[in-house]
Image (cartoon, rainbow, N blue to C red):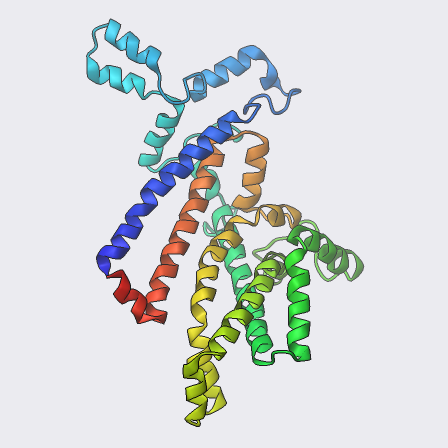
Length: 348
C-alpha cells in the first residue's frame, strides 16, 4: 500500500514537468512581450528593451543555445562546458532556478523575486496575511460553503424524491449551475453593496473580520454547490436501490441508522472523487472573483501577470496550481481507502 502512494507521489514529478513545458511553449507563442504591453511607457524604447532582454536573459534561445555550445567547442573549452552552453536556454535556466526553489525575477515588479511577491503581506501586517494564504483561505471557505449547501440539499432531494423538496432543490441547482459566478457576483454586489449597503464595495480590509469573506466565498462556491447537490442526489438514489439497503430495512433497523450507516456512507465515493479536484479548482478558479471583490490574492495576480506577459510569474503560479490539483487527487485516493477497504486491497 505504501509503495502505491509513493508511486503516486513520484507521478507528480513528470506531470509537473509537462505542465511547465506546455505552459512555457504557449506563453512564448502568444504575441507580445513583457516590455511592449504598454507602448507609451519608457520601456518601449528599442535600446531599453534590448538592455532589459539582456538583463533578464530574454535574448537567449527558448530551449537550446547551440551558438554558445559551438563557441565553447571552437575555443577548446571541452564537452562539459559545451553541454552547459547548449542548455543555456530560457526554459532550462528557469528549471535550474526551480531546482533551487526559486521562480526567478518578476518582469513587472522589477528588482523582486516571484516567490517574494507570493508571500508579500501588507505593511505592518503579520506574515500570514500574504497573497498566497489569502487565496487559499478563500478557496477553503468556498469549498466549505459548497459542501454545507450542496451535500445536504442533494441528500434531502434524494430522500424526498418526487416531492416539492426534490423539485425546488433541482430547480435551484440547475439555475445556479448555469449562471456564471462572475455574473452572480455583479448582482450580489449591486444588491448588498449599493442597494442595501450591507457590505463595503471599495477599500475592504479582509483581515479585520470574517464578514467580508462571506460574499466572495459564497459566490465562488455556488456553481460547485449546485453540481454537488445534483451529484449527491444521484449517488444517494443509486445506493437506496441496492439490495443491502432493502435488507437493512427488512431487518427492522431504524430509518436513521439505514440512512447514515448504509446510504450516506456508501454514496460518498463519487462525491469525494468530485470534491478533490473541486477543492483545487475553487482555489485556482478565484481569478475573476478576486478581481471583482478587490481581494489581493495570487488569483488576481495571475490575471494581471498574463496581461503584462510576466513570464516568471505566470510559470510560478501555474506550478502552484498544478501542485494543488495533484495533491488534491492524491488525497482523494487516500480517502478512497478509508471509505471502501476493497479499494485498498485491489490497489495492493
